[in-house]
Image (cartoon, rainbow, N blue to C red; front, side, top):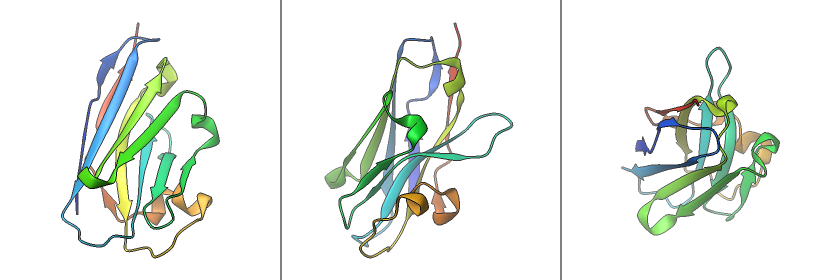
Length: 129
């Protein structure tokens, strides 16, 4: 499995940010894919995840309101948009994939980093004025 993130960089507070992740190298249809981020000195935290088998998506409570994620199953691509980035959003953003998972609907596991065994290299986002 290969996961390649893109779209990071330096952005100003209140600007726009849209990250992408392309997944490849797998053949199973049932998987869970998600966005995570890790700020300096902090643990990696889940932002959003999606189960292909159940069609269920989950947002972390801290991500509701400013973060919007979507997926294009045909292209094995997911996106993460951040409305009004803030300095606190500075982090390395990762996408991750787990599978095959079967039918899956478990928010806590979906947003837990240790559920995933495939990770991208990450894309750095720095929000500065």
